[in-house]
Length: 329
Image (cartoon, rainbow, N blue to C red; front, side):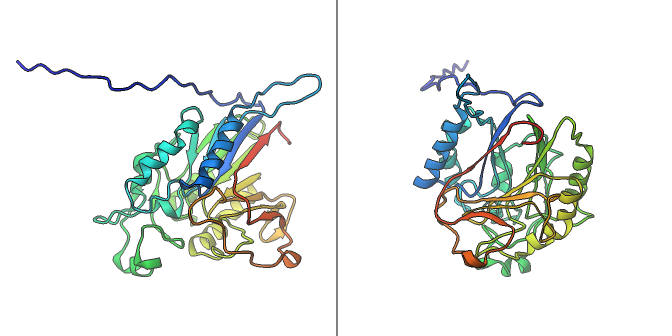
């Protein structure tokens, strides 16, 4: 007979998390992109963690902010860049926040990380995450060798401009959270009308009951509108803007969140390159603090900036705290 024994070397403490706010209740969501694992990104994580600890109470003189109850990262999490050791180290850095705060993530270019043997894309991203309400098992295609030669550094590890095929799994999904329906899309898979992503998005938008869910928040990595140098007119963004912006406008999406540009911007309501009160507000929140630092600059100086720019910043690091008080504010 063989006898085996086991020894517990260490036990972690018991932690708690809160379920989402009730429908109709004030809702606070932390929004960020392009985090990485630097001193600056650690500070950003600490600020988000502090926001999760706020009290949601009121007295006769002061109203305390609503505690953040979910974190949405719109791509570029660990900056592993095909180094398998950097995913576990990122989760170690994030552990104080993630042990008590629900996390939703979108795929960024630093998650492409194609396999060196099969050339399948988003393999670590699919391995490390299992997002809510997955439509089905992930479906992907290998990167064509000739296409790979056209990419930056002839590599599909972290291509900035890239079109691939990665559907279902963690690629696109939606969650209900308090007052909001949060829809996560993938900038780097097909977004044409015949694509799985487009058809799923159309069905999801059509099914939302706005009397119960007044806010629609959409998150993906590459901004459809940018005021920064570096990522304007990339192939995957041009495609998504052409085909999906009409859906965003038609179904009254309120806020669209992106990263990719390592900076902050907020637009006025915008549709088809024109100011339009019926269009979404676009947020760029890619200043999480990664090792690549800030964007290279603005496309136009302040006195000539785009008319749709309400606010922009290319100096600070940080995140966005989206507070939805009720159906209108």
